[in-house]
Structure formats: C-alpha cells, structure tokens
Length: 531
Picture 1 (cartoon, rainbow, N blue to C red):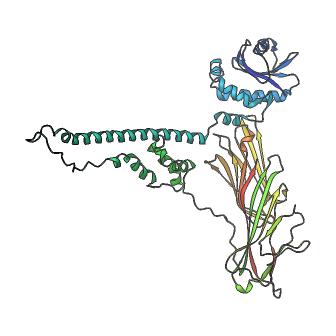
Picture 2 (cartoon, helix red, strand yellow; picture 1 turned 180 degrees about the vertical axis):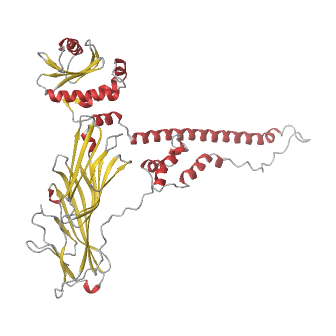
Picture 3 (cartoon, rainbow, N blue to C red; picture 1 turned 90 degrees about the vertical axis):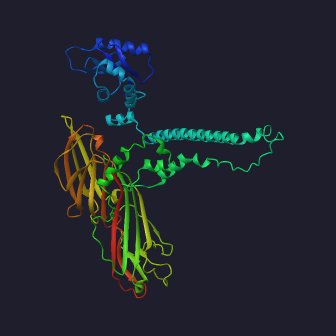
C-alpha cells in the first residue's frame, strides 16, 4: 500500500489539516480535496471512491471527513484498517471533532500521522504505542532539569556568600583605618614642643571574620550528610543520583517540599519487602556425607505466534564432602536422553579430568592420588547452551486474545509442562492489562490476583508436574488492542535439571565401592517472557 496523503476536510472539500507522505504540491492536494465531495455517491454505504489517478478512503467525522488518498494499486483492506487507526487517534487527542478543536491540536495530530505512516507505508504501531511516543516522558530529562535548577541556585548562593565576604572585608578595612587615624594626625597638636611622639602600634587588630562567611555551606553539609530518620531502606535511582551531586539537590524548592518524602516512603512502610527465598516451596534435601548441588539458570523468550526467539541455559554442579574418608571418589553422570537436542558445552574445574569421547561422563580428579576438599564446596562442572532448540523449554505458554464486537477482549491463556523430569513450584504467570480496565475471570485453575503496581493479572499455580501438567485461564476485559496483553512474564522455581544433568552413581577410587550420596537440583528463572 502507498498512502499519498492523510487529511481532515470539511464537507465542502476545504482542508482543515493535511499531511502529504509523498511529494505533492499544495495546489495538487487542494485540488484533490476540492473534488472529493463531488465524487461521494448518494444512497450507498461505501467508504471509498476512485478516480482515474487516485483512490479516496474516507470516514465521516461529525461535520468533517477524515480521508486517505492512496494510489489505485493499494490494498483496500489495509487502507480501511489504517483509516480506522487515524480516526481513533483523532478521537483520542481531541475532545470533540469540530474544526476549532482539530486546529488547536494540529501539531499533535500531524505528529501522530507521521508515526502511523512513513513515506507512504504503514508502520506496525497501535493506538497505545502512538500515545506513548507522543508523550515521550523521560525520567532522565526530569533529573537533568532538577540538576540544572540546583546548580543555578547554588551559583546564586555562592554569589551572595562572596558579596557578604567582600562587605565584611570592606568594613574591616574601615575599622582599621578609623583605629589608625588619630596616630597619624597627632604630631601637629600634641605636647608643649609642638609635636607628639610617634605612638607605639601595640594594639591587636580585630581578628578577621573569615570563618563566618562560609557558614551557609558549613551548615548545609551536615544537613545533607546526616542520615536522620530513615523510613525505608530502599533508595530510588533519583535519590542516589541527587546524593552523588554533593548536596546540590537540597537547594531546589521542588525537592525540599515537606510533603514529598512522606509520600515516597509510605508504600515501603505499608509493605516492607521480605528477603527473597530462591528455593520457594522446593522441598529441602537431607545432605549426606557426599552431597551434590546442581543449580541451573534459565533465560528464554518465546514468540506469541509460536517458536522460540532465544534461549540460554547455564548450570553448575558443586560437590560438598563432609567425611574425609570419602574424599577420594568419582562421580558418574547419567547419560543424556536421546530425545534431547544439541549437546551441552561442558567445562570442568582445572583439577578435574575432561570427559573422554564416546565414553561415560565421569567426574574425577586428574591426579588419582589426590582428594577432593573436605568441608567446603567445590564447583566441579559447569555447562551452557544458547540457541533456539525447543527441547530445553520446560513450560509452554499459549496466550490467545480475541477482540469482541462490544469493545471488549476475551483472553484465553493455557500452559503445559514440556519437561516431565522437572517439577515447577510457585509458578506465577503475569498478563498485562489495558490501562483503566479490570478483568472478569470466567474460569481458571490455580489462583489469580490483580497486581496494582504493574496493572497485571497474576495467575499463580502452586505446583506443575507430570501428574498435573496443564491448566487454563479465561477472562474478558475492556479494550480491543491485542498487543496490550504482551509480554507475558513467567516465574517459577524448578525441582530437577532442565538439561537432564544428574548423577547416576558415586564410587570410591580405591576399590570401586558404591557411596551413598544426596543430590539437590533446582532451576532458577532469570527471564521467561512471551512476546
């Protein structure tokens, strides 16, 4: 599709505002708009008309028309969808669709038109994205403005301080001159001989009052450095930046308002953050004399259309031996399942022997006469995988929003466990919601709650395993923009190894006797999103 121009005109064909996306003269666009009302058929419900050169796709807007002028080869369905987006942008930016209100918001409307169509081609944006682009609120810009105001106020204070210091020095000079005046003129009229002896200048001049001039800065420093009453332990990025300025922010009237700190710290008092437990509800493992800790970290991004955008899996194995009699052991890993994808990249400790090719994977010291450390953990093995193989995806998420004709959207989201050898605890699936809208849940498994901080619906499932591997949630919410419900964020704590790395046996180097061991394997999610 090629959009030549987007315009709002009167029913007589007079342009109110118009944006040309291709090279067109003003006379040309005015001629096209003037001929447009004459082409509108009567008694039909069509919203497009054609001439020998161009096509008009239009929509009534109270007493005006909003229309797109395209070439005749353009896709009419895409043009109508683009026209509807233009009309929604106009309704969103203007309180009413009259000529005065549109002229008042002409600059914002033209900017929004440029975000929707660029060089005649439609950009993949929706109303929410256009609105956020037009707002362009920048937290960093606000901080820079505060810093500039504080520096200006500091400069004014410095000028006042120096002026006061100069005034004190001038008074001191006058005081010295007044104290030395009589001794300079007394030699003409003192004593019988007609002159007076030169007086001994034994007086002590007053001490200069230099230490009084920096008083404002000296009083200001303790007010900045003192901790005072701390209502919350967490410091925002803004407060940390202002602290780094060395007290400049205290001179700003905005930052010194008495009500501001009380508001910012109230949520921290109401809901103090508890220390995060990485294990969650994963059962604790009773440690034996030979204890192995396996921990994996998962980062992945799944496409809403299906498929995997990116996956990174990292893991490490730590060996803890508490009995010195069992320090000389070797650990045999279980073979990887045949259904698994590409081979993992393993990295051993420098003192641990490499895996022999085409043989069982065994973790043992290079020097058989040495022993593993006792009483302290040792990272004996690390592994990593990065790619797009879906074998290592433990949980699949399918989010399916469907717009309705009544201005609402029906959302169906379901999950299914893909890795039967891993149990997922404390699963939370967070679905963003449209601003100002609240869901009506019709059916669900597990529990759900609204998260006011992120305005999202948090779906909680205590446990997902091979016995209870799937579930679904259905709700409806106001709005018809399906892109609002993404990205879907997932968090959980897994019990087991996604990569299938676990021990098969532990034996002593001398004699080959089996050793009783314990193994604790967990999976921690760093980032798990559906975009």
